[in-house]
Image (cartoon, rainbow, N blue to C red; front, side, top):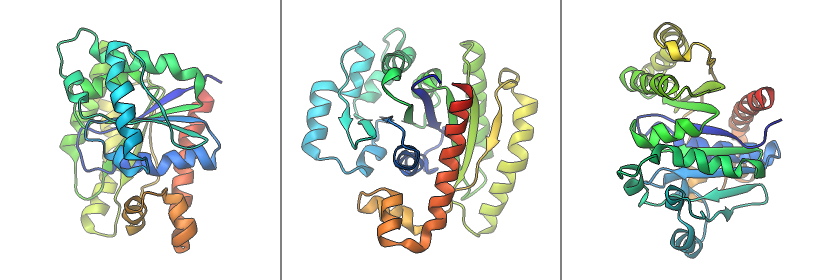
Length: 276
């Protein structure tokens, strides 16, 4: 099996649970499935970086000596050993300057970097900036698998259509091979809006995908189990421990959440193994 396939979690809209999904699943890949993974916070806002329990002095040194921005100059990027199974590249707010510079080939720099380090990992997991220009373009060009998180707090058809328009365009223009697109509905609760949104994701999105996007005709789309809106996610991130550790140690009544996350991780990893 090919090492280091790249899973990119993306949406063109913020506030859809993207970083929280990466935070929840990284532990499932590493601890539950036993994979050696590299996690990259490719969003200048640094939400994922702020969720992790990393010493501020370590972060400052990493950014000073080997910021993620260095990949745009083909210089060394520092990697933090977050755990035995998880290596991490933190965000840097200077990423915006790199994204929107006039430097030729900037959209290819992330791809070139992950190609260089693939062999060291079972999986590379990337959180992205919700922006359909250079940030999303470069992330998609680096990806083998796309995970599209869509919040169910309300109907987001316009944002979803824009995201898939961009994905179709990139696959077409760059002749990019994507193995699969997974959709994870997030923030699901019992409200009418959430139920309507989930119906739209499960029924309308596959229909739209199959009929509208010619470049994606050979890229399978699969809707995964929704991630519920539960206080346990906020509670765990608030104390900077993984969702799994928090539930197992402090809130054992929420183990159904862990089963959902484990199932999602196994689905994604199964695709990696099948196509590696």
